[in-house]
Image (cartoon, rainbow, N blue to C red; front, side, top):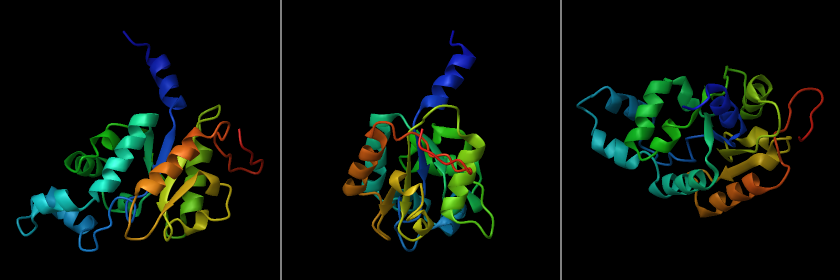
Length: 198
């Protein structure tokens, strides 16, 4: 029988991925949270099979799966999708689109805090300040050049992989994410007044 404390400690040491959705996984201009919510609700005016088949780019899904297989990631959702979908709805969406490994490995604190004035940098910094476990934990931020613009020039930029708008998490981004997670001693950047790399 597994020791719960041992299991929890092991989970805290696993690398993290802060995962955006739009322009990372979802690059379809005609499918978004509205269609996803309708499909989840069984709305007959929406072709649910088409939504689940097309809402996320197949190559982006497979590239993220490959990264997960290599690094056993935990996920924190940094996307604005968290404003519209609950954890349960997001997990159902992931499970219906080949991203079951994301649903099964969401961090206990599964999304970044958001408000009308926040930006991606502040949201991720707030999450790290609140939930960063003791010790160095590698993490990667998978975002796009538009919603992740505030990360440029920040302490978090070295952890960030930028996807091109309407392109998604393609092979060059997979390679970049591998490099971030494999760089020795990159650790977690603290975001308080004594910022440093552990």
